[in-house]
Image (cartoon, rainbow, N blue to C red):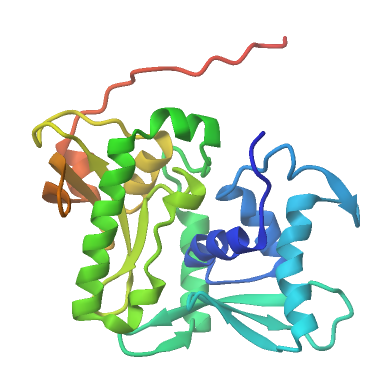
Length: 276
């Protein structure tokens, strides 16, 4: 049986939600959560407050902070939760993204929140719903080579950040470890001026022109960020494991490079029985 959501997982998955929307109340975090996470059978068990268990776990982040007596608390150097002292609801709070200019963290501005939420409303990629691949599918489809390639690029990205913007080092996140392809990218990192960067990794032991598979969500994310300079596909070719770690050739493509420079072929369909 697939594992249930935990509080540490909530704190990881909340990050891409707030990257998209900027600032949300707990009720809004709960509403948007399934854009980045597909509840398991264990998550859907109702325990109290007529809520599925996974929604209660989200609320527990707030209620446990309240028990610690912290009006404001930051999580993973990525976002902060601000309690509402006037409310009697156990999970009443505002979740706010923390942003960086490469030297210090600060709370996202109201204007930036408006811009992100307006953009989230206006953008209409071809496939716009974020779908988290279930763990069985992840285990079947994500090969050991693909996982190792992600680790390789993640390590390179940590080295790059440590050299150029060490302040952001602890904020770099290997997101796909927790969400599969649910976010449409594998690694969340930062540019040298503190802006968020999104990295998708595709790895092969063969040459750089070897075709690769891309999920509907990954394609949608690239399409959604077409023309931006914050989204990259890293192609790792001739990948191998050596005595001192991983080795491979790296080529970087922007979202526009991928959308315009590759042909996409439908290789399989999912069939659902009709009930007319």
